[in-house]
Amino acid sequence: QLQLVESGGGLVQPGGSLRLSCAASGLTLDSYVIGWFRQAPGKEREAVSCITTDGTSYYGDSVKGRFTISRDNAKNTVYLQMNSLKPEDTAVYYCHADRVRGNFRDDYWGQGTQVTVSS
Image 1 (tube, helix red, strand yellow):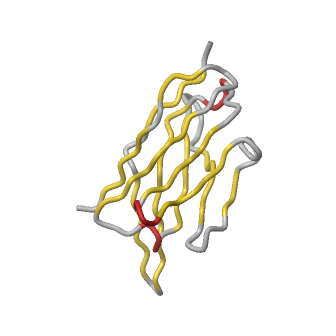
Image 2: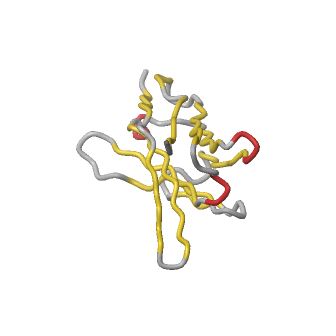
């Protein structure tokens, strides 16, 4: 069974930090581009960050300079370190694994973890 299990969400004060984890089973994450997405109430799903198989990272403008994506291939886990959190960061955060091989594509989503930034 292919599965992505997310953890690390919770309630944090503005200016605080959280580290989200996405742990994989049934697939090896080093073969995939990994993305973090988020969706807040009343808003469309937003791409937050992604990391390629060679470790190149991308960040959306709203989080650039505050969030860091990383991967630990030995643990088959991807992380999103979130610093200087703002109330606008409140959302459900999802991990996504994406792979293309020739004419084929496979991709998988985690279940999501809630992040709430509030005083």
